[in-house]
View (cartoon, rainbow, N blue to C red):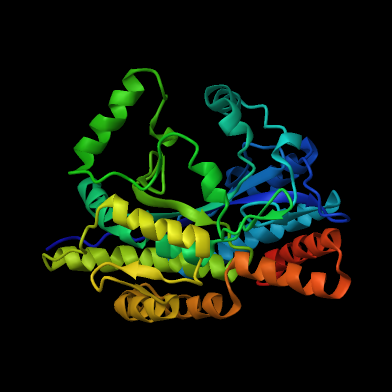
Length: 376
């Protein structure tokens, strides 16, 4: 009998720090980082830019454990940042900041990154959310990675939170992805025959000296180089914690659903990256508002209908993993709008009353500050 994977969960979030008075980006002083580390230990660290902070939960057996840990992390970072007149945002692009005004963290890893990627790295004023799901069998990880790629656009549509860039509405729901896709070794993962092929392919690049290890593989979905997990990397940050947890729970449930098919000698149909990439673009451009293509039906399907299908698809898994409430809460994202939708709504409402673009964008940042703690 096939041993069921653990399906443990780990969530990583990257926050942007802003001044609480004006909402502009703020560089984290060393004292702030020292205070964070004193309270949270290795679960917090600086990120590439000095205005960023990264946190990561421990290995969580259930979504309930993940909630407790993520709440502690968000609460602690918000409280410590407040001592310095700052606040964290769980958003993938600051609405008005200019990347040219930012400086990167002085660490060997980030100095090397800036040197290797040059101007591409300097534009990385973006943040994201990564979700690790425990799958202990190496070849199973690759098998499920090949199938799970189909659902990456759905996760992106739920999470999209980066409509603005340098004060302008880009027209996209996730402008972050346009920046990140300029890096090498990004985008949808290739279809691989097994873990051995993955190792050989990565080692071929390592052997040339181009990269030092597999952590420099930045696909939307990858086998982790540090843990026995599959790691989704396509998601924007979710300004609200409960929305982040619902997206993480969906990731966990979809993995279990694909494992159930495998146990029954079945599998999800694997479509060419060219086709999945079309849905990836639709999610990046429109979020949830324009639907995604159902390639079996050969038509664009409204996102509300897709959500109904997904909830039915993973209902058994949500019950087994004790996350039915979190999965059902995906409807709240659909009803309220994703992060990009809500930011645009705040800007529009303020413009209607004040007719002042600066005040409108400041209102967007204030709302993001509020949303960071609303579920804590």
